Amino acid sequence: MNSIFYTIPLPDGLPFREYDCGDNTHMLLYSDVERDVFDKLCQRFEYEHFKLYDSLIIENSIHRTYATGMMVHVYYCGIEKALRIVASDRFEKYPNKPISSADTATLWQFEVDHSLIDCGMCYIIRTASGKFFVIDSAHPYSVRDDFRIIDFLKKHSDGQKPVVEGWFISHGHEDHVGKIKDILKYHEDELEIRAVYHNLPSLELKESKGWGDAGNNIMKDFQNELERRTDIKKYKMHTGQRFYVDNLEFTVLCTHEDVFPRSLENFNDTTISLMMRVGNCKVSFPGDSMGESDRVLIRRYSADTLKCDVMQMSHHGHTGTSPEFYRRSAAECLLFPITEIKFDEELPRQEANRVAISIAKEYHIASNGAAEILLPYKFGQTKILPDETFEDFNGIFNLWCYEYTDEYKEKLYKEFLARKNSGRTQSEWE
Image (cartoon, rainbow, N blue to C red; front, side, top):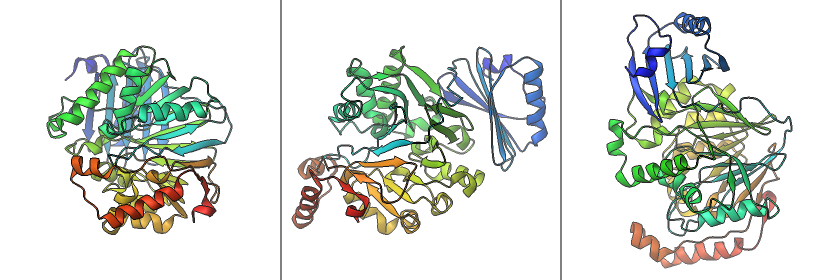
């Protein structure tokens, strides 16, 4: 057992499994236990003067975070009859109280540069008072997106140096951390990043050998750049923790810690699933959640928790979460962080996408121009910004061996020209 657990109360005499969760964070998992084990454990924490920092009940799961020079996050899931104890000697107290009661914000699905790559996602939210919260970034093959993201933030900061109150990392794949890594490394003077929220797994897990050296190296490089930036607060978030950025409320619904004891062989299952609330409007960001994390979400949460107004489609609309996840979410507006080409290819074979679209009133594909959505969401108010990037088909073939007919490429280019230099409202888009 890691020595960090020697200093905290633990259930007596019960079997457990131990996991390395990365960033000097470790977890004990107790299976097939009753709720009274959790209640007695929390009583012991309070008796031994551990200070309760935060608590939250989500349906049949109850979560408590204690902070006394270290962090202990304890949560019990009644559906699973599982108790998890997560402990870390590195803990920044995340903002767990709302700063503003305003109920408006603006959300952009940023059009990452898809000239050479079909994946990558970036979402930018501006709060009621003009602060920014950013989710993920773009792939290293979106070669100038570090500049494009900063320029976009400057444009919406009246040309001033942008201030990002929080940058959320759903997981460590290169198409999600590639460009924030570059921003941290090369653009320190061009914007201020006050905090990064994440829960990246340990590269010491046996599954990491199957994640691929290239992706592991990029995640490690990102972690090194983040560690170097001592001016940025680092929040490692766990399921059942709720944090606030100005008037935005975020709830963590799932992390890789919830997948254990099942395998994390698929790196996408290390994704954090996040729910954002602005007033009564909810926006769901499942990241690249797939099979194992989808099982957690479906097992634990009903439509009461998953129902949302706006939904980022999991894993870019590739194989991701299940049709049932989208039925319970019942979003009216869908956001696909993908290209038109790959969307068209995926739709016939992805039942989940078709189910989500059948429920929604509108959907938007990132490669066709950034989508600007005023929150609270109202159908008919979405604005599509001018399309900025187009496929380099020769480069795509050289990199990926994807080949398309000349007729198809000409059709796509004509559609791109029609979108270029012309913003569209939702009614015009239809």
